Length: 188
Image 1 (cartoon, rainbow, N blue to C red):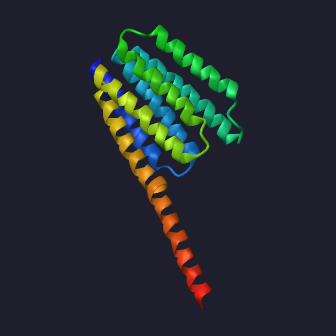
Image 2 (image 1 turned 180 degrees about the vertical axis):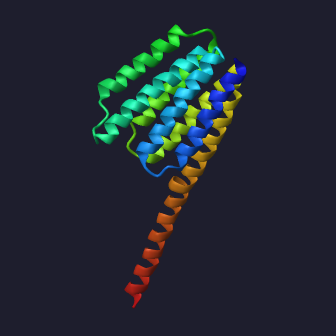
Image 3 (image 1 turned 90 degrees about the horizontal axis):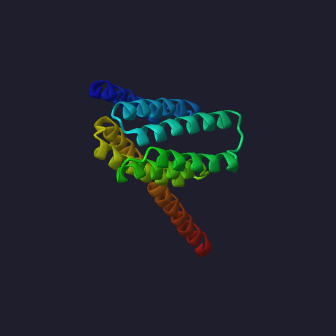
């Protein structure tokens, strides 16, 4: 079973890596849907049912979010509340040990992340919920899921640097250059 579980982990890793390279959001979401579904199978085969259920729920959330996005509709708050309740109930039902709290916390942060409109908040929250799952992966022996989480976190950190830190610095430099240019014009 462990070999089959790791096979699904490899499929999920491939889907995550490929998904990060797509330009269109709908293709990225399809890849992430495949990845979370494969991880849910991976966790079931490892008998890590809390992680499996949370990943399966995230698959459903991604699918519904995908449907809303392609129809260009807002994500309804009632649906978000439903996801929170479902995540907590699933965590309670599958609770075996203290480790099983990590996927639930990760799921709650994931729900918050998908409601954000600013990409920088999405990236920051993604870093947190993936890191929580990485700890869970270590504790349950889902090493390929851990590898995927490390790659995902690395990619997220790179994106934070590129889009949130360096772009912000570039804007400040441009604004600073404009101030310098304005001062030159005023002295002439």
